[in-house]
Image 1: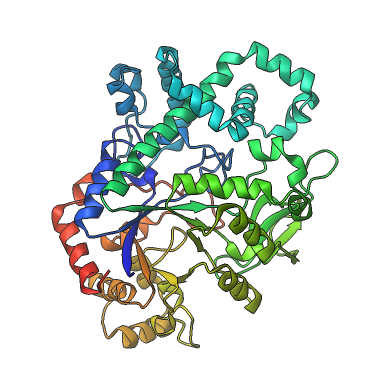
Image 2 (image 1 turned 30 degrees about the vertical axis):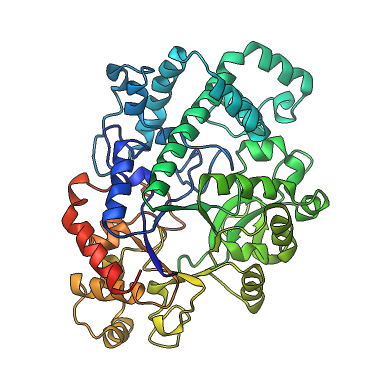
Length: 488
């Protein structure tokens, strides 16, 4: 069945406390999606962000981001006083200030925790999520002693998980560890309530799963045998991608590489748990950098950039056969972008997952492209652009003259403004792909001041927020008309 949806991360929602949350504006956005005739809402990873603020580099593959917990909901529950939220008012309503969140959010959540008396639901949550929650809460409690360093710089007994020392730490820091469990309880409680509301209004949630995990994470600290680490538990190889259109020196992500041989020996149990967990959070999971399961690019730890690396074979179909064996058919979108080979296409087709088409990649005047609308296929998701792309308006503005001339002929449109954006959107929605996902910025005709991320850069990404005033019934009606025109 053909369907349409909108990409907007939770942090980009409007709100009172410096970042989008799971509160009233999120419920209002669900209502907006329903009015606009959409069937899907796509968000980025929801994990607790680390240095650089990227949702693709988090302290856990399972935990949620405390910044997304809505404070007004805590006030209504009697766990927080309104005056305790001071310090989190946005300095710029259309930008997230992550430094402000880091400095001021946790004292507010600790005030909430002090009023929380516990209940059976919290006890059940801790029991059901113990397989990751115990390690995560302990990790964060230890990290709170030296938050500026990664766990490889902890004292040896903590770094190497001495049972005696950790037992002593747990006994003397029980309250701090319980606080981190409470924060996760509140996160998941609010998220699942929002997801239930979305589902009840005909909106399915697409969530994003990074292929890799941050080195400075509870996962790597607690399960070092699952990664390629040396005797001191430091990465031997780190992840990235070779030089491409985004960067002439490639992208050096720095994540540790999985030890797929060790993972296979225990039936890929960590991956099975991760996929199962993600499918409780989301209706559909988009796996970022899917091509890394066929072959992955890695460089030696300490490399200055990603150029001096090579391709290594990934686990291939064996991993997904195991997931199917354990979980049955799963709703996964494979982000099959980047340097692709026939083997990558064969893996995706063997798994049966829909791949991705990005309209912005389809207009090279020199050669035909699989991303051009005439080459699309049904079992795929068409995006006007992803979180890593310019907005459509920004892309058109910077397009070179020859590529733009081809775009103009193809789309039968002149100019690089709203009319050209509308024509590009129509091409996405009219595509044969079964699902079309449009970033909200493109429906708003915004330029690159609203761009969400520029790959291979740090410092100014992940901060854009939508103004509440633009989410009007008129905009919803316009989006619905386009959606229904193309039978989505």
